[in-house]
Length: 80
Image (cartoon, rainbow, N blue to C red; front, side):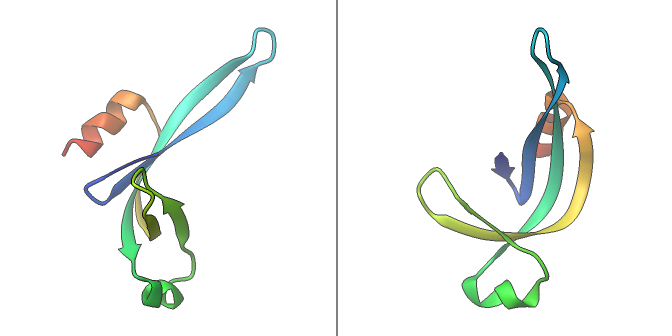
């Protein structure tokens, strides 16, 4: 996962061959909203992750910007 400027990019891996084992990697980019603990009840779904500094982050998805993207497209979107 990569989080930058309110955008969350998640990598997905799908097995495409068993011998040799090969995977296809795609990315999904979503606009997310960080929530405070009191705001959790206002949204149907939320997710909780721990960032690199050990801080707990609660967020919800606001909009999906793209699915099945390549790494280069994700970098271009996050760089905006």
